[in-house]
Each structure stands twice: as structure tokens, then as C-alpha cells.
Length: 113
Image (cartoon, rainbow, N blue to C red; front, side, top):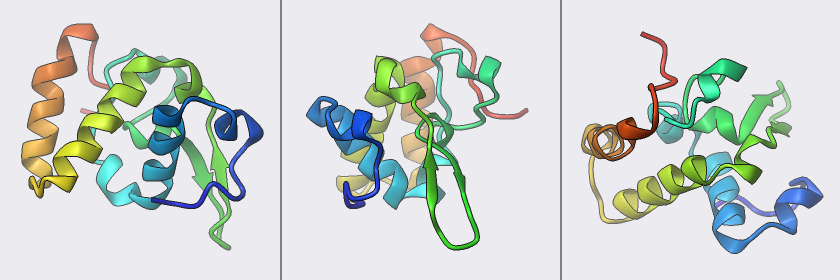
């Protein structure tokens, strides 16, 4: 989990599950960039669950946070499931399959085809 230091005040004052999701996203980009989101955020250019939290990282490693997940329970629920399954030692393809099967009922995947 990434430190809360440097995160926006809106993230720092959000509920624990939201803070944890932002911390996990910042610490695990290679994992969450592989996992889709199903909240409809492809309309705003998101291409993975990671993009719901992080809009960019500069050459110095400074993170620019996206505020989208602050108000989206689907984004946070997906990340919480990824966190749980990852902690259980599940491989990434199995995690992605679980997310697809669980959340595809809410809308289309935001992953590029």
C-alpha cells in the first residue's frame, strides 16, 4: 500500500475503503492496469480500473490523482475485490475473470478492445 502522503485532501478525508483503494492503486499499477472497470468511465477516457484513481505519473514518479473513484462505488468495489483476491494469492488472469464475471452486469468494460 502506498503512503497517504502526497494524496489529495479529498482522498485523505474519504472513507477507509476509498483511501485503501487509492493506496492500492498507487502501489500496484501493473496489477490494476490489467483490470477493467464497469462503471461507464470509458466515456471519460479511462482504460482500466487504475485510471479511476491515477491520471498520470511524471518522469520523477510524481502521481497525478483522478478524483473519479471518490464518488464511484463500483470502482472502489472492484479494487477491494482485487485487493482481497491478490492477498489470497490468486493469479492475475483469475482475478480479471472474477471481476469480469461479477461486474459486467453494470456496463461495458472500459478496457480497449
